[in-house]
Image (cartoon, rainbow, N blue to C red; front, top):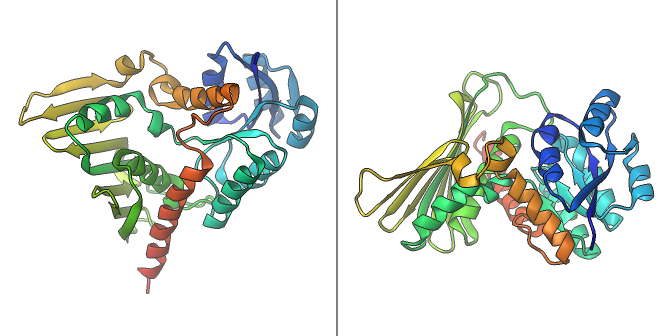
Length: 322
């Protein structure tokens, strides 16, 4: 096929920071339409990326442009109806994370995608982090992962007043990354929670057991000293300490010196969308459309499992109150 024709729904900060520049870097992609209710944001983005067709109605855009694929990038409380309509129309779909605001939404989207035979991708970009995967491969040379830790910290002590709570907002990223690192299927989840200076839960720790024997440990805190997304990977005789947006250190066989890896050097790019895994995430989606074969690492069918684990954690937070 020629260039892959993509329509964009959403022109917010995150979309402009990572998704538009990722697609603009591909020679075989043509962004043919953009839709946003904010006229100024839409005009600024469309002008910057040379997108000719601009809409306030995504339904009109899809009907007129008939794209090969659609990106839906906006807060999670607004995505469900739009993603559902795109799938029902037979359009291949890339949606931001998380995959819905409830397990019902996630299951419905996964079923509709299968029924309509569309290619899907959820923007869990840490699965395609060049730094994480490079060091993960080094660890796995020693054997399967025995245990892993994923930590996501922020310095934000304000109460959460958006439609998504802290658990849906950030813990979904940690659950998904642990599933990617550990492999296998989740068989047990145990969690505990805290409220640190806020009326809502802003600290969570979960221990996740996998059927392959791996153990994953999740720790989220929004009451820490700075933002960091960090992972530990442990295999037989190997250990990696990875700050995904900075550096990683790999150790093996008792060596205390280790080997340092820089995220920008590993990715071969200095822009966040390059070393953060966003470029690779879009590459998978575009290549899947071009070949007609699934090459996406986060299809709805798999991310549904992430949502199921997340909902167990949410349920445990409710039960902990009783």
